[in-house]
Image (cartoon, rainbow, N blue to C red):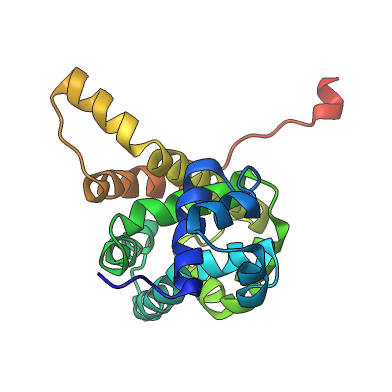
Length: 218
């Protein structure tokens, strides 16, 4: 098998190390050492560690986001759209990442989780700037499926949703081993995603909570 070009090699090694150790704990020195290249190569192809992180995510997002945009366009034309359909529309694009790279779905979710839990503000700006149209289509479809849900409540519920997905995908191997040991279940990434959809749809559309005034309680 031919050795990948230097840029691809750096991306592959960085992706693996970022997923395993996180963005903060993976230094450029570790990446260059594992890739067998020098720091000048990283600077030449990417310019900075932040740009390298963005490039690693972009390999997945460039494939994922157009598929999501197409799915949201179909749902926008659906008069009976609900959150089960909205969340279900993510299943195909997520699983398609396994065709992009081996274990692509799990790796993408690990990387997304790292960006979500570590302080990587540049990633949010990058995703917003590069994939703003797709994000807008997602939000428009979610709002259509949740009429009457205030924007601030929608903000929290979508972050709770993302947090649940990230935790489940990042811990999928350990959770699957426990489920097999305790209940005799055999799960895959696909079965976990399908199990998540109805649970998350119910959570997003649950009745509004009764929130007391913390100052009054004090």
